[in-house]
Image (cartoon, rainbow, N blue to C red; front, side):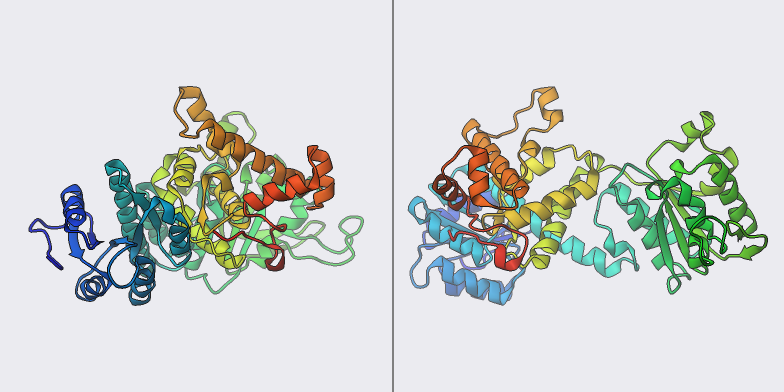
Length: 473
């Protein structure tokens, strides 16, 4: 039956099965009916007609059918609705066709004869992807300014979004806590952009990154002649942020004597330049951030208690990525799209194996580490889908898995090949992609190195468009 919906309401979406064999369609229907609603079509034309009449999330598309082959139907489906997730079913000897289908926008492919568990897992992942994309579009359409730069649907992140919306219109001082790389500055920017100060400056300063001798001058400014080299009056960050928001990152590293000066600035709303003798009024909202335990620092007499309470008017704790693993697929998709666009690379998907590796990893560097890894992997990817071997080797063997004896799911041969690829790439990077020098370091003949690079789909050094070469297929 064409377009025949199941009587039970769909649980997680709708799948369209396109195959000319009734038995195959019936098998899919029995297999998936507890997971989702199922529609059927015998060929490409019927499939397109169903798509015009029904909202479909996933299409299971057979390659060999009467009339148009599946790969051509795929192109027509994507032209009709680019957001539909399409999985191509091929014979084993048609893998090259499947790879071409992925280049045309297919989400994945599956080979015949089918394995029931593989189908269930693939459909579940495809439905999750579709649901996630819809949720992201909805959330982005409803989020206030600033929060749309933050990626996450975890319950803790939702709580942070709500808290930002509540406190942004006020002038309350905020203390953002969390490990390095969790996105504390994004929280500060979201608060600023939703506040009445949004049209005024947002000034960010990493206190720990400033030379100790210059911290006071950078924050509060200095007068001409205040110290050797002070050839002119210079306003500090407080003055530069006048009317807006001052973000003080790693506030726990501030010297005790400057903590007293910061406390006075917060209490009196005025500062005094280094070497100056008059006060300067400032209208600044302060958002501070730290990755250390300030309560413990107060107990250890390394941080002033009065300043701690002055900063901690509204606390916001940003969770580490390992505590919001349900956000990992969303973050991967976000950074994949960002860097594929930035580097002009045709990389638009993530394999199940790669996603499994990313989901297992503990992310000690949090979101910042993930962004760096996805950025590098997009540059070095050997095809349109990010594979496990495109990721840094050490991600495949996370410490948590090793500690608990968990199976990493990485066969020895594949692990050896992945390690070899990562090692060769690192050597090439160190020698500036001079292949002759790299071959000498590796103890290989240059032709052997070229063969290996060709097998991995890497022809020229990545980074710039004219330097990127990806083998077809």
